Length: 153
Ligand SMILES: [Zn+2]
Image (cartoon, rainbow, N blue to C red):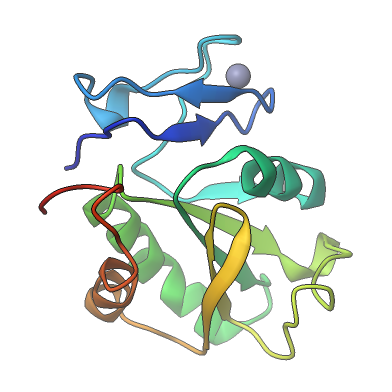
């Protein structure tokens, strides 16, 4: 469990940016415009246009998992990715992009999947490839947190 400070989270449903008050539990956060749950404690499935909205409007860290349904290591990583999303709720936004239905894969520099790309304020800051366990994911992302993301975990 985490508590957001003054982060901005994009609603996947309607694309609007939400400022999340520090006093609210992350898991309960809802979109101020359409009322959809923001789902900040779980990976969100996005398409290309939703990913662009998330990257353009989010502040802080966004971790993207590029995957495909036919990819065994991708499927094996899904529960690890979800566990890390719960642990880092409020610190980093976890999103998943299906490579089969995306035109952005080569633009993102992905040559194999699963591919993990870490963004800060919409810019790529780090990347990893292959199956990664939840605790290693958490350690990796925490290494990119700054004091503006959260004073202590
Ligand atoms: Zn919304």
